[in-house]
Image 1: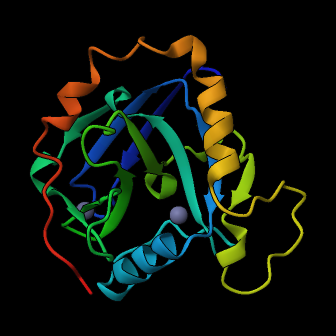
Image 2: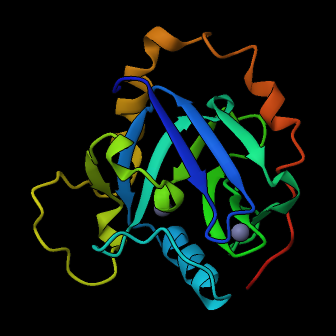
Length: 189
Ligand SMILES: [Zn+2]
Ligand SMILES: [Zn+2]
């Protein structure tokens, strides 16, 4: 875990403003097929994506209840490019900017924030690794970051790092899962 950060996240048209305040769990680049398809759908709708120069999806794993919607809650929607997904993607409907993905109940306490809308990138913690490199599109250039096939090793490390935190957020995450933010709009595919 890194130190506490405050991140202001804006969609590209400015209607949606999220503020994150907390200790991020992990910053990584995901190369799974779901991330790639999700970014491609946003781009096909004229939006930006959270694509890192390596082709992966730049992701900051955080506690959901550390995210506050400052403006634009009515513009926040969710979508999925695969059926029966457990991790709906959250985006700004106004301009198709990715905001994050979260887990369907009861796991909504975590969100994989998309950092494309973070104006002050220097406030982000360092990227720790590439994950799901076995499904990466193209060849990954060597950037010195560790690489993992699949997601399992990362989730194991996260669970280990979170041990001292267990229970800390338990009473608060229900607020997020009750939120109107989780509105499935159907299957773009
Ligand atoms: Zn917007
Ligand atoms: Zn992914």
